[in-house]
Image (tube, rainbow, N blue to C red):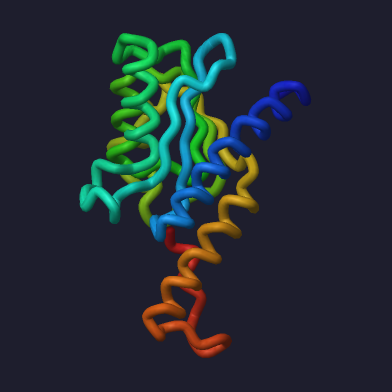
Length: 171
């Protein structure tokens, strides 16, 4: 990958991180996503709104993809790139594929819910139609997620410094 492409990916991921911070501020799991068209314009934005909307369908990726499709006027987003701060779950990865998104760029890995853990989604039949780039601004995304889940445990009285195993890696 060229340094120019790496810088461009990092710049777009910063936009996704800003949306993740907006989710954090609304007491949502801090995940942000944007869809960028072939000309480099952001055509869709989203952040997690699962708690606010009381729906698992309110993932950052789904909101950004819906907004992009409305902006473009077509459900086919094959010339687009999706930037998301956390590795998509199987549901979102399936939507990415069905929307014909050409490239997926994500920050932090999700060892517990990420699409790579799902045997169906990671088979070669499914993997080959989306170019995937991982680890872009991963540390920033991980730090935000860790802070959020530590805050949640503190609110619930479950987190005592040093006395409980850190479960923040299981997002």
